[in-house]
Length: 626
Ligand code: ADP
Ligand code: MG
Image (cartoon, rainbow, N blue to C red; front, top):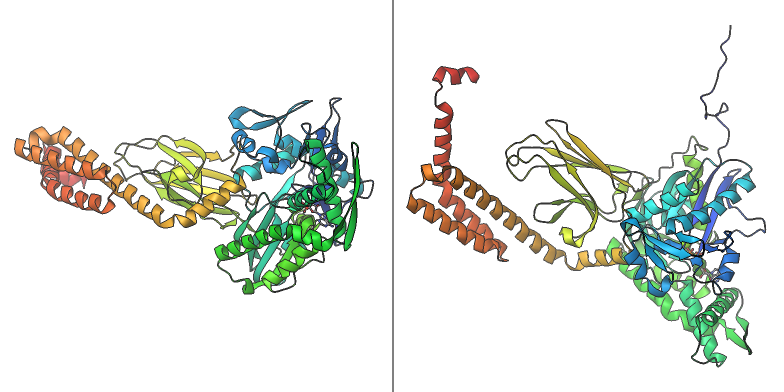
């Protein structure tokens, strides 16, 4: 009798069935969803045929919510219940978001762990919830147009997003009931969309000018691995600034005075945005301004617009220059330039960028769809729809991860720009005799001192068997998964005692802070090294002083005469004085002096110890034990 084959629950009986997987570009200004259909990556439209979903959510008192264009239109009349640019708030603490000022003009309330909530008519909303509301709309759109249930999604994030920001993005997906196949760096997704991962090796620049942010990423493609050589940009520079510059100019031309209130300002910038977008395809546009009792028409030429935004475009190029310098490659070595973001449609931007890199940038794929397209190609592979694809896509961690060691020093375990997923282990030891617990403090950043890095998590490894200082071996393992999320575990090797933590900070760093931290680490590298050496010598001095103190306490009466004891104590006072100063060399010398001066005491203690051990035992007994 033939056996019937039955598939595992949840596993398809037909292994070649196409799984529905999408790529989602969850943007600051606009979001999109894309999928691979019959071998071609396409973005999915809503019922009205629009592909771009403005990343705006409006909460209405009736409990309904609007997401997208309709919400964006209401932003000026209902600013506090209409959340724009929520991506800027993801993974940040309440202090961080309050400091954004007019960029985030909401009423914030601090929740647990300093997590910010936005006060709205329907209650307090966390940035994660607002993002989840945007993702839900995209999920529904995908399931409606694909006619089936989604297997999962690849969601893109900026390359510089830290642990907290990535985690917040993942949390939003979970809340929206979307299985995250992978978080993917936006520039990597853009490069994939152009198939650059298939083209061999080389340096790629991804220039991404969106609505409110500018990002430049320098990638190196090496054996199918995308390495991020450097990222840079400006988190407060984008198409919105073009709108603002044009809005001021329009107000001037129309003779609108100084008393522009919030609503009028929003009206003018929305008008300016329409004019700006129209100027991409036309040489001149007439702006009709109608509000309250005012009515006028202002003609704008592309040349006039170019003059207004020229300075802003130059700012992006200066950031490109800095970032190239950080990455250590010349503009001439860049093989491909990829344009991303709606604002790269502006003809002046294209012209300036191609002039800067000395080559024509890739613009064939719609710049506001290219990230979603690349993400969908990756999603298709991850969902198992392309079993013979060997596309191996790796991203990197944006900031180094490490541990606090004695003296407040940061020991890097995984360096910045290491490809993920990655696991690294490092062995540490105890500082004191008989130490049975070890405080593990996980930090992120490039600087030498813990106080200059960001604290990610703390946990304690207990149950270390008491041993002499330096004898215990504790292996600390850092594991970063493909989404850039960190897991840290510590294990005492002789007993196997283990302790671990999933690093899940409640909020994160602002990208501005990341930029500043990186900047500082470059400009203060020497100063940091000096500081590090000083700390190391201080730790050494402390170790010697504590050991001697304990030795005198234990055996001073038996083994030292008054004169010797006084000599040692005065030498110790001498070293303590040096230790509290700032001269690392002097401390190092002082340590040598005190060690030499106390050598006699150490050897007496050793003899004494052996004698004590031998007391009451016969030589034979000792021989037997060997
Ligand atoms: P984000 O990545 O921040 O979500 P996008 O990449 O969608 O943003 O870019 C949005 C910006 O692109 C807006 O400032 C918008 O005005 C601008 N933009 C869109 N289309 C055009 C166009 N045709 N010409 C000029 N700017 C445009
Ligand atoms: Mg974008």
